[in-house]
Image (cartoon, rainbow, N blue to C red; front, side):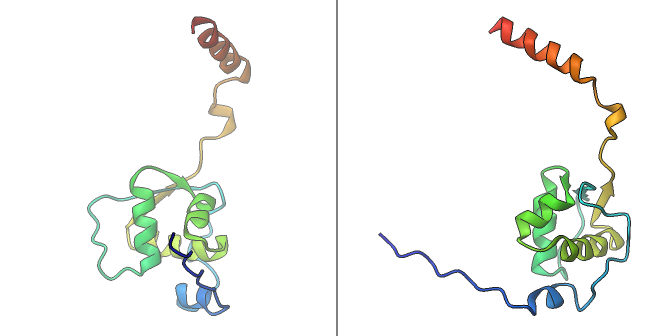
Length: 120
């Protein structure tokens, strides 16, 4: 059995380096549930490793800002700076989540679920 790999400790400098020293995103439209999608066909050369990872994550479909932050293991504030840079460069698009008013009624969803359960 191989010994576990030592965890890399994160220093206090890392977020500063990841965001090129910026503490605020260029766009204030990003909240925790904003959905992020990668734009296909955009070149990845010149992007930092974290930005490349965002592109990889969001190629499979839309993720929320908080999901991207979780996958990257970064604070949401740092993730928002990265995402706003990628929006500015045209690598990703963002959109608000579907408002609750446009979602189906909970009673309708329960009836569909009950119907499915009765068939199987």
